[in-house]
Length: 216
Ligand SMILES: Cc1cc2nc3c(=O)[nH]c(=O)nc-3n(C[C@H](O)[C@H](O)[C@H](O)COP(=O)(O)O)c2cc1C
Image (cartoon, rainbow, N blue to C red; front, side):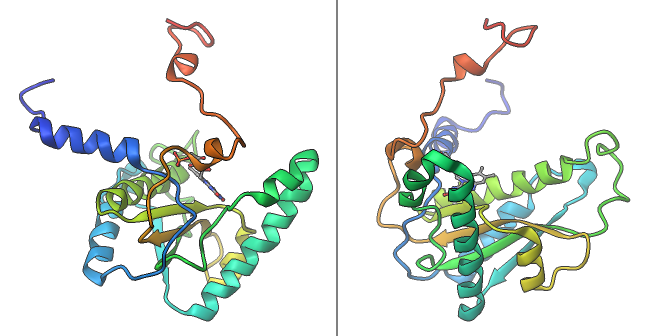
């Protein structure tokens, strides 16, 4: 810790938001006040980005019919994913993988068009645009948790179909359907772990020293 550190209570709050953030799929409807939504989006917008590219675009879905169309796209992909999973198909179909119909707000997060001209930090790693958008989404996720709102990241959709539905220009790409809003309670652990789909690994297994695979 240095003299520049936040006071202890504030540090604890940061770590608490990180630890208690969950990917939520159960929502209880309700609303998100416009000012609060704005505050959350400002938090997203303060994210770091490669070359200060700010490649994120957020589309708020306020039209209920459009929300239903988006949910349909996700349902189609859910079925295709189950087919691709083979023997785990039935198990997958029992999982709740989105809360689009029940959440207060749906936001689509997309990469902007015309990204090729941004070369700083992307010449060898063009996917740094995606990394930057992900930083913005994580800010939104953590700020939402601190405000007591759940958020779920849904990536089960055909990007071109969603791009067509929302009128994205050529080259722009939707990457996340974000479900946001009040929840009854936050899951105590990742839902996929609670459901027995996958178990998280410990940091020690994933932490190496000097060479790949060599644990400290
Ligand atoms: C890039 C990304 C895409 C995801 N897409 C989906 C999705 O389509 N459906 C879903 O149910 N969860 C999705 N998740 C949530 C993960 O399943 C979840 O983050 C993981 O199981 C850990 O749980 P936690 O976020 O509660 O810690 C996604 C998460 C990330 C980071």
